[in-house]
Length: 225
Image 1 (tube, rainbow, N blue to C red):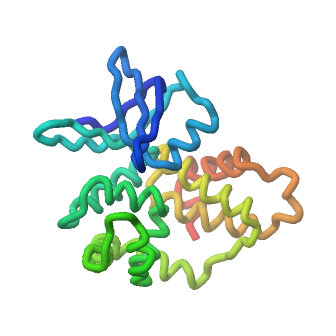
Image 2 (tube, helix red, strand yellow):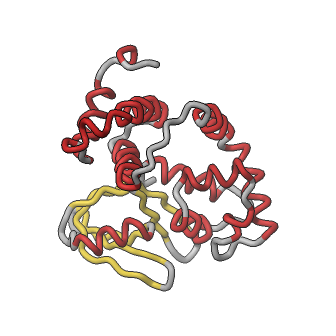
Image 3 (cartoon, rainbow, N blue to C red):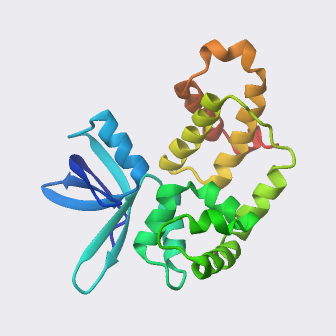
């Protein structure tokens, strides 16, 4: 069982709607299918020969071994949950995660947005019904959390700040913090950003990450709300 791979980026390429990287790990080359968002980030930033760590789902078939890589454990686990649904293959699962974030998929399940789910190539009406029904059961706690949290949620209309907050959540997940640890911190940061006009000159992703990790590294009783 391969849980994760850390290696130097040798090459990356696209085949139709599939995206791949080749990682050199101690002299072995691993060909891994990744999500489009990571592919575009690597391509744009020219990160050849840079070390990359990916959470891996290994699918063994009669004639091949397939590796699927994700930047966070949550992405990997979500991919596995989608695969557990009857009739859903790896490429449909990757297509769903290529087009939408985990939170967008969960919101579509909560609102039973069949049109959104059907917009993914390979997903028809019957499969969308099955996905919504089974994923709603699997992610019941997350859906209830979102419904409870939305009552008191603070909205930030600045798209740049919202992007920073989304990137921050992904960064914390990649550092192996659990969602149950991250979500209370995100609430605190949203409240603190309500004072943004006074602090905007110091606002940056690095500062937000540092602040979030300071909270996370303290005892949970210090920031419980």
